[in-house]
Length: 186
Image (cartoon, rainbow, N blue to C red):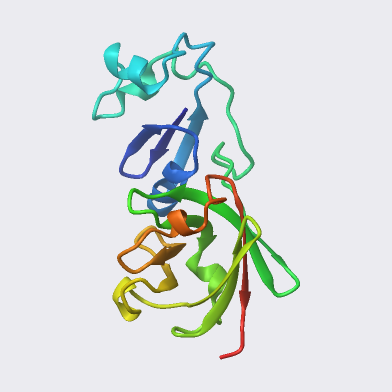
C-alpha cells in the first residue's frame, strides 16, 4: 500500500500503479510505501479505514504505524513508477489496469507516442496477442464493435473496443502483462 502526498492531495491506496498516474500529474511531494505486516495492517486498506486512520486532511501521513514501511523508489520522491522503454522502433510497457468496461489501460503515456498521427494504424501486442488497430481521439471515432487505441482521460494509452470489452477479446491481458506498440505505415 502507498501514501502519496502531492501539491493538493494525499492519496492512500494499493501499490498497483494507478495512484502514480494521478499523483504524478499533481506533483509528488513525497511517497511512502506501507509495510502492512510491520504496521499491523495485514487486512490492508480495510484496516486503515476501520481504525480511523484515513482522514481527508492527510491524517494518515501522521500515523506512525502507517509510515513504518521503507521508502521506495528512485525518482527523487520515493516512488518507483513503472517505466516504458523504446526498443528498435517499438515502445514497450505493460498493462496497468483493466477498467470495469474491459478497456486495457497501459503505462505508456501520450508523449511516448509522439509522431503517431490520429487515424494511423498501429500494431500492438498484449502478452503476445497481436492487433492492428487505429489510433483515435475518442471511442466514437470507430464503428461499434471495432478495436481502437487512444490516450484516455488518465493520459495513458488505452486499448479498447467501442461499446465492447477488449479484455474479453485478449484473454491473456491482466495487470503487468507486457504491451508492445509499433507504428505502422498508413
